Length: 109
Length: 114
Image (cartoon, rainbow over all chains, first blue to last red):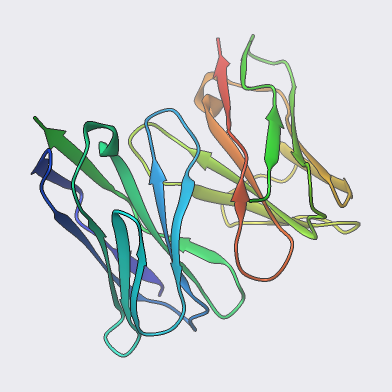
């Protein structure tokens, strides 16, 4: 079957750094997405990785290792507005998005 | 980036009525549109995939006669929840795809069935 695992909840302090991990097992791989979702809103795109390595975009970075079926989202200089759920999603061989359950990130002052 | 709109953003209806939700791609042609449902504190669940001009492909467990999907043009898809019941209350989100990878999400529709 297809499976994506990420922690259910994480807590971090404002100004700190947090890493959210995602492991996946899917039928085929055509890229991995990270989305941010605030409560009651639709997901918003954060990053896309299809090749191994680190993609940096401002305070957010995303890493992919295809051989390990592993990705992480790194958030630096955390702000209170970063409190949200972070969804990992993998595009399989049929270009369908397979979603993780999401990681709820709680930022404390 | 590409923009997808959804209408209405919020709807409250009585049990037994039907509700139509529209999803539009505003600045690109969406060859494929997706409909998701999200219950509180849960992840997105794909309901169906629709390609312009053809019948939608429904995920297992989703009743196609209850959730009618029409993708009549490259910029518009509609989801009609027929004979809605309180258990259909949920957050419905559409997304649209022009090329084969990235999906762009609409803002979502909050449906409450009384």
